[in-house]
Length: 227
Ligand code: ADP
Ligand code: ADP
Image 1 (cartoon, helix red, strand yellow):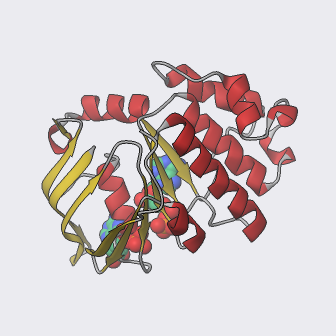
Image 2: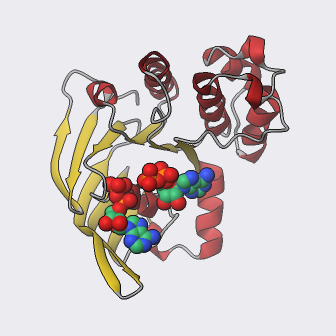
């Protein structure tokens, strides 16, 4: 479980002070698929960045499995991020000169108990494309490679920032279906920032932000957690 208590984040840049997070408290359970919604500038990326250790908090506490993440040293945080967290962005960030298979193997090499790469390829419908290069794939296919790569190391948590932001509706639906299936099958905690309301429907928890605060946090009674 992740538990945030009264987290604030203030940016100071060029004399400008921005309170990006103003006292955010929140819990996300193991195996949960949580969605963060909110208008541009409301603090969604900042929230994701502080939970995933890409950025530090100004004050407050973030406890993950009994560890206070805000007290991790740089080395501990790097190791935690590398071994236990997966990231999926709007841009697919694939290695252009590696094949689909090789891109996913890179992910597996980082993990402690990596998943079987061939099985993963089949799970995301890419087995027949395993020897292609990223430029030979559609956007939706590239995003599936990116998902398989982050899942290969068998992370505790996958963070997604607008994973369907560059995709049309059909491909977005496919990506959503895959994220939901993987969450159910592997019990991986998935935290997604999105404007896509389809993702909100399949989430266990929907967190709405505005001006650096959580304005609502609802649990979907229809969806049961995997773990
Ligand atoms: P969202 O992801 O909801 O669009 P962000 O978390 O990116 O919102 O931004 C929240 C606020 O913090 C915005 O006002 C944004 O301009 C500001 N902000 C984000 N990152 C930085 C930064 N590195 N330096 C200064 N201000 C920032
Ligand atoms: P925006 O919120 O403006 O749409 P992005 O979605 O591109 O911005 O990025 C959200 C956050 O994730 C930013 O703080 C950015 O620095 C970070 N980020 C984006 N891509 C990567 C990456 N490949 N590796 C690490 N951090 C990234």
